[in-house]
Image 1 (cartoon, rainbow, N blue to C red):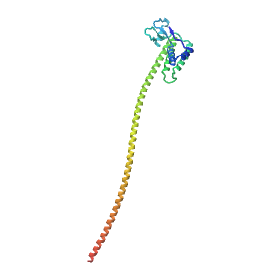
Image 2: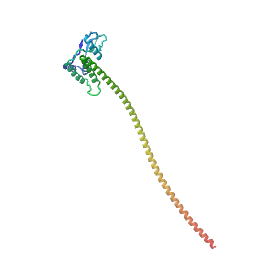
Image 3: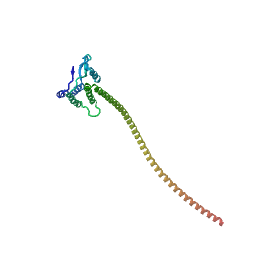
Image 4: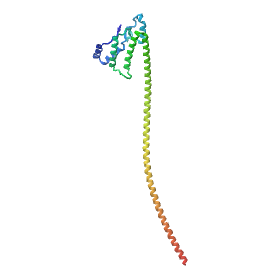
Length: 248
């Protein structure tokens, strides 16, 4: 039977100074994950007074079978109570592993979630040894909190997908609006150019019409003077003829 014991400061320093960072994280994480477990034989008989506690712990913290299928050993929750010194050591190791694995202090962090989940399992183990009913209540709280977190994660993923779709839709809509705006600006510029051309053409035609009107008035006035002079001459001629006919 092999039980996990707390790490001392010298052991922690030895791991950090003599092994690589990734190896140190792996060792300490494994230690912390199985702090409440011990290696026992699955065929080893359990005392009658601990049978109920063993059954509860196996239900709360499922045993981990050995990697070798032929082996009868596996990791299961320890029945040894935790002393005050062990709690202090666990507290120290908890802070150390959080710093070593660079867990985020705020926000969503899977590393911090895993470490605190393992620590909560250890608290459940300790309370189950003292009072099985409190252990069952804490297990229910743990399972309910995990279900709530999964529900929030599902909701977050759904909202993330919805937000992504809406973002893509808004982007395509914005591109369509920008294209429509550019087309409207092009039409506006074309209409402004056409308006300028029409204004120039109107001015030219207006000047031409004014000149034609002026010339027609001048011509009409000249013709009027000509006909007036012709009438005057004709009246003088007729008057002379009358006088000549009267004398004869």
